[in-house]
Image (tube, rainbow, N blue to C red; front, side, top):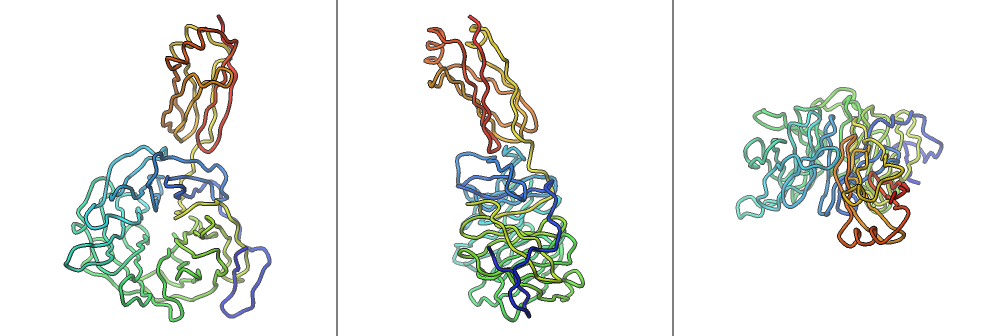
Length: 378
């Protein structure tokens, strides 16, 4: 249990008074090197990419996803299909993605490895194409960008003389504006909620929650509550769309907690064990997996391939078994609904022709596996 306390009061341990966020929302995150989606309580978790090496995903309000892979940003559909590459691969390439709510821009930080102005820098890319890191915006010494609406970017001090300042950039503007520095914490990352009335930020060992009495760039910031006692370090606090709940990464996974800035009362739950780098958005996590297969099939038709109707937003993998022997397998990315046709392998055809009264179909996707028994008509 994470501790949630008022800055001026003793530790409180009762249940939070704030209402939990609606489960129509979703959290995108990285786990085992791939991009996953889940409901805020961790249910419905499903993997949408394969082959690994993905890090630090984020999601737009329409559900479009940006993630880091191979020294570039990858823009992905809800089912994990690659839409296009973005960003700039120079230096270390992007290290973190932050796609704007409208999905038109992606902010990121990277390490400049050149001899001129080396070190950490933040840049912005067009979401729909690869974009030189000098084309739209580029600034040295700032990291962990997050969006304040679609037009402004919040960044944190990552310079060698780290002080914990925050900086605001208005897209298309001529400069930046220093916003807020907590006198007690050196903030390194965080997010302002959609209503611009709440701010959550961390120095790695504490998450501090603030009330904003006016939207940034007004410096109307009131520290209210601390979240402490994490497993390892805190990273990437992210607000639910309605601002009632916060999610973040610890070493054991992704935690969520209802937030009440008046009482600072609450407790967290480990929603996604092993999850990393969460980003909360209003888009639904995707349809749950279901499959419709024939109850019986003629052997000749089976040898040509069995078609399965699938509902999910995921990569669906259909496997055919004769007894305990795998005789065929096929996979396909599905958005809401689709069909997967699984054909027996050459060895599988020989086994099916040799005999057997039925096959077992196993369909996996969206973190779920369903099985169906199909009778063979000979």
